[in-house]
Amino acid sequence: MEKKKKSRILVIGATGGLGFLIANASLEASHPTFALVRDSAFSHPDKSNKIQSLSNSGAFILKGSLQDEATLLEAVKQVDIVICTVPSKQALDQKLLISVIKQAGCIKRFIPSEFGSDPDKSQISGIDNNFYENKSVIRRFMETEGIPYTIISCNFFMSYLLPSLVQPGQKKPPTENITIFGDGNVKGVFMNKVDVAAFAIRAVDDPRTLNKVVYLRPPGNVCSLHDLVNLWEGKIGKKLQKIYLLEEDVLRKIKETTFADHSELLFIYSAFIKGDHTYFDIESSGGVDGTKIYPDFKYTTITEFLDTLL
Image (cartoon, rainbow, N blue to C red; front, side):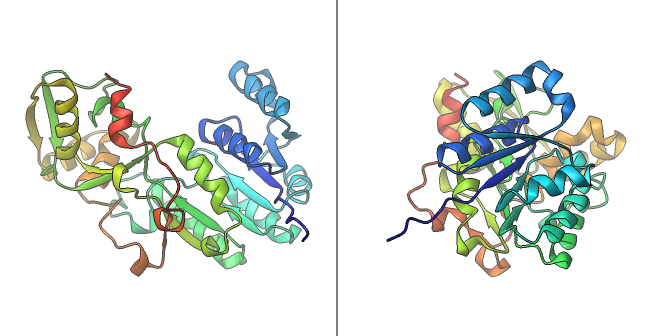
C-alpha cells in the first residue's frame, strides 16, 4: 500500500515564540516545513539564531512578509497547509494572506493566528481595544472567501500570568498576600506552548477539525483562582492571605487606565470573572474538544508547571 505523503507546511511567524515551536513540531513530525521570514529578521540576533536552527533541522527558509503579495503567493504555492502565528496586534495583516490563499487554490487548510480564547465567545467587547474584534473580522473574511480552516483555541499560555499566580505586573508567586479577582470560583485554562504547537501539527490534516474551532480544555489545565491558590499552598506548606477584588472594582481599574497598562487585568477579568474560557459547552457550540479527539495526548498540567516555580 502506498504511504500517504506528508503535507507541506508553511509557518508564518516562525521566529516568534509559538511559531518557532510549531515549525519545530512540524519538522519532528516529518512534514516538509517552510518558514516565511522577513529580511529584517536576519539581522536580529535572536531571530537569526532561530532561522539558523530551523534551517539546520531541514526547514526551507523563504524570504517575504504579510505585506508583500508576490512573495506570499510564491510561498503559498509551494505548500498544502499554512499556519500563521503573528502577534495579535497584526491580526488584520492576515487579510492579504487569505486573499492569496484563495488565489493560489492549492491550500488544504489554513490555521489563522488565534491560539487564545475564542473571540466569538468574548464578553469584553468595547473595552478590549478591538483585541478580539480584529480576530473575529479575520474569521468572517476567511469564511466569506471559503478558505478551509482550523482554529486552535487554547486560552492562556502557561508563560502568561501563571508564573505570578495571576497577579498583574508581578513575575513571581506572592509569598504573603494574594489578590483574588471576582469570587475566585470561575475557571480559566492554561496550556503549555510546546503542547499547543505539537497539538496544532497533529490537527492540521485531521478531517474532524476541518472548518472547526478546536478547544483545548484538558482537566489538569482548567482551574479557578481558588484551585490555583490551594495547589500552591499545598506545595509551599503555607497559607496566603486572600484579598478579594470584586467585579465592579476590577472594571473601574480597567476603565481608569489605557489598554497597554491594563491588558493583564482585562484578560483576568475576561477569564476569571466573565468565564470566557469555560462558560460555554464545546460540542453544543459547534466546536471540537481537542482532549477527546486525541485521548492519548499528554499535556503539561498546571500542577506540573507550578513545580517549576518552587
